[in-house]
Length: 312
Image (tube, rainbow, N blue to C red; front, side, top):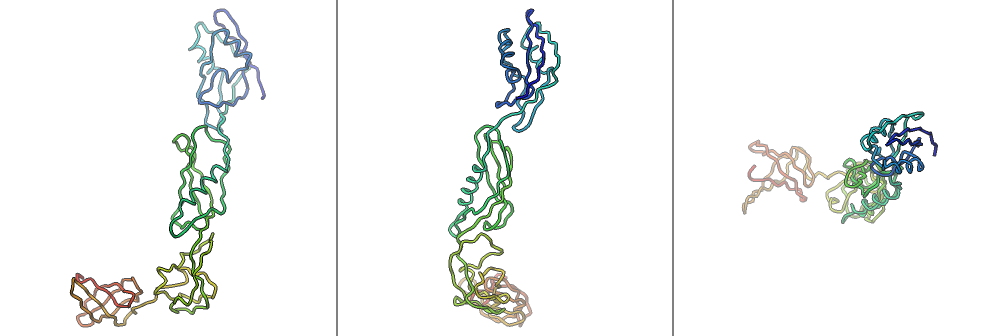
């Protein structure tokens, strides 16, 4: 350690003590004491005169520095001694920094890995493939934990940006941004042969199997929503089927008659109406009574009939 000598003339009950002040020091606690600032020989001499080890100033935050000037030490000593007379020579300041806990990226990587696995559900088992952790040398001493959350509302699979609050003794010390690539075991539909544009999909057109994916450009087609789909464009054999490749097959067509079923309690009325929209299963379409011209809406069922609320 580099030292610079400061001559402190301390007159206490007729005694004069020469004190060597350190030029730069590193402290660990919340406070800077006199003993941190002076040499061991000087502190022992001060102790013999009854000066003690008073607090000079609060410690700086971890990885920051604080300058302690002679006037600060003199002010504290004047509060703790009687008939104190000080003459300073040669010294300007002491540079004080604070030591914290050494931080390993392994701590954060483990926390992110556990968090990713905890997001698994009945459909997906997530796994951390790659992670990029920001550099962080030291943190304040204390009880450490991480609060992790996903940035944005995109799905888990693929490249993700995570916000991680680094919490020390219950307080947020720093928020870190972690880049993570996440994979999952997913049930996917693979096209068995080329599909023409507009071709309705059947179970014979695809094969279902599990794959581990770490990139997903669009939501996958699932067995639950497979019925009633058709190819939105030409789809080549071997393609993993996503929502970008398909559209809901219209069961009712615009400006074409359709069967309307209206129910209220035990009463059921069937009639013909003109559909003003294309509509697939589950979609709402506008309808027109071909006799009265009255407009109303209904929801398309999987059998191609349109169900209408009688209250409408």
